[in-house]
Length: 311
Image 1 (cartoon, one colour):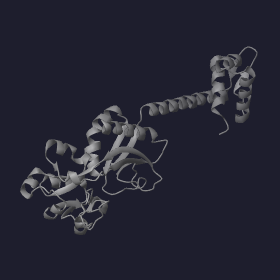
Image 2 (tube, helix red, strand yellow; image 1 turned 90 degrees about the horizontal axis):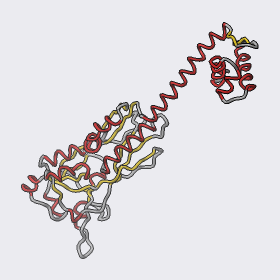
Image 3 (cartoon, helix red, strand yellow; image 1 turned 90 degrees about the vertical axis):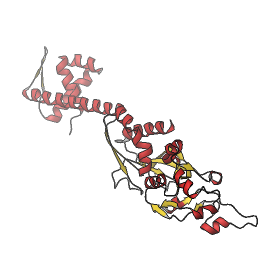
Image 4 (spheres, helix red, strand yellow; image 1 turned 30 degrees about the vertical axis):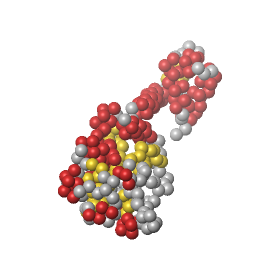
């Protein structure tokens, strides 16, 4: 396409203003500049658009046809610019967010009614996976990951940290007793994860005997600096399943605070072995590709959810 939008604007303005001089004033250009733009436009099209006389300007037949199309093109460009501006001011479009089921249920879902009210033009899609997903393959815009991040080309934004604690239901403890030492865990039913293995490493500090031996390390096969690797008697792939098992008096579990905060506040779950807890903090990040098309939707979602999680 040889014709520029500037030349279209000059042509339409000359017709609307009634003269080259008036058009030049309206466009804040020189008369000679407007005249050259018209001449250049006619040369590119290979036709005369305007018959110039000393008294007035008159459109040729080709000029009348071209004027109609030029107005439509300029109007479409104005509409496109306005739409982009509105889009930037009020984000819209599809946004797919993926997170492990527990985080989705406890930290995302409770706030989505408020998010929809604030951003009604965003079509939000929430997916849950207990495994790490490929954002491009699964068409995910934001993936929320808990734990240390691997090297990645993705952009990451911190959503905070969460601590893990060993919990059980009051009914289970009433029936089986409350463990006071790590050795006492041998007598209890431990609930763990099918994968990954690091989730079965509970943040408990192993106690060494005076002679330097590590009785619990020998018992559980672990390192005092890295916590206690348990062998679960009952395992599940989802933290939410494990939470429900703990609530159902099935045994002891080690779960993130964001999953059990309400249960602990209500007394449905209680913590044990608090004195042996390591000062572990699980980082929580939102990962995404930097995309101009998604930028507004991604940033408004992240800003919204961070504000809610910090509240």
